[in-house]
Length: 162
Length: 310
Image 1 (cartoon, each protein chain N blue to C red):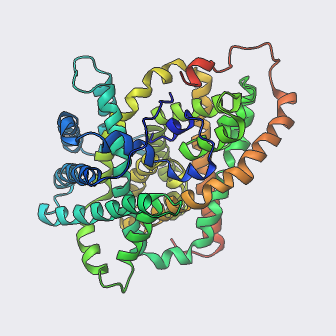
Image 2 (tube, each protein chain N blue to C red):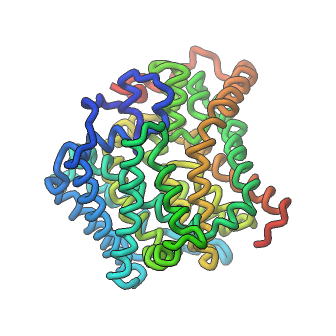
C-alpha cells in the first residue's frame, strides 16, 4: 500500500497555475452535473464555483506559505465561515451564488475521482479476509451510531427543538 | 482515501506533520505535471457524472415506513471504480488513479468551502449547539466497546487494537504508526481497516445513514453531526441521504457537517491519542485473556505482506 514519495516540490507559479486549471475543470464538471440534477442557472452556478474555488486556492496556498503548522482544511473552513458570516459585506453575494451550487453536485463529481483513485487498492482489499471486513463494518457502524446517539441525548437535554 | 501513508513509508516520525495529510500527495501528483495531459481522465469523470445525474436518485421502499435512498453520488463512485477495474477501458490505469487521488485532495477544499459557507450562514446554531457538537466526538468511543470484543472473538490479537480504536482514516493511521511502529501488529490492523474502509466505507455509511434516518427517531441535527465521523468522502456520502430525509433543514445540516468536520480535524485526533487509543489498549488486555482464541490459531492473523505494504 505505501508508496515512496518523490522529492518535495516547491510551490511555483507553475504549481499555482495547475491548481487553477484543475479547479476550473472540476468547476465545469460540477456545473454541468448541477444543471442536470437541479436546473440551477449555469451562469450563477459558475460564479458560485469560482467563489468556492477561490477560497480553496487561498487555503491551500496559505497552508504552504505560512510558517504555521495548520492544515488547509482549517484555513478553508475559516475563510468560508468568515465570508458568509452575517453582517460581513461579502455575506449576501457569497450566499446568493454559493446557494446555486448544491452540495450533492460537488460530492457526485468528487466521488467519481475517489472511485477511480481507490481502484489502486483493489488488490490489497481482495487479499484481506472476511473477518477483517466484519470488524470494519462494525467499527464504522458503531462510530456513526455512537456519535448520533450522544448528539441526540445532548440536544434533547439542552432543549433544542426539532 | 487521500493518504498520508506515503509519508509513513518514509519513516517520517515527525508528529507535527500529521496535520498535513493532504499536502504531500497533492504536491507530488499534480504540481509536477500538466493537468491537461490527463484530459481523458477528466472527460471520463464528466461522462460518469452525466450518467449518474441522468439516472437520478432512486428510493427503494423496504417496508411502509422504511426506505433506502441511493443517490447519484454512489453511482459515480462505483462507476469510477468499475472503469478503473474494467480491462477494455485502457485509458484509466494506475497512473490516472494516482492523478485522480492527487486532484481529489485539492477538490476536498471545494467541498469544505461549501460546508463552511453554510456554517458561516448558520453560525448562531453552532453556538447554541456547541455542547452537542463537542460531546458527540466522545460518542466515537462506541467503536471500542462494540467492535473490539468482536474482533477479539474472531481471533485477532494485537491487530485488534489498531483495528478498533477509531474509524481509521489517515490521521488515525498516522497516530497508530507513530506510536507502535510501521511493522507492528497494531499498524497491520489499522492498515487493514484503512483499506477496507476506503473500498467499502463510503458506500456502507451512505446505506447506514439512509437506514438510520428512516428507522431511528433521533434529532435531524444528530444525524448531521454523525455524518462527520469519517473521511471527507464518507462525510459526503452520509450527508446525501440525510439531506434527502430532511429537505427543509438543508442549510443547518450542512452547517453542522461542516463544523463537525472542522472539529474532527482540530480536536478529534487528540481524543484518539489521549483517550481512544489508551482505552482500547486497556480493554484489550482485560478482554483478550478471557475471550481471545488460543495463540496457535493463526488463520485470522492479517498477512503481513498484504496489509503491511510492499
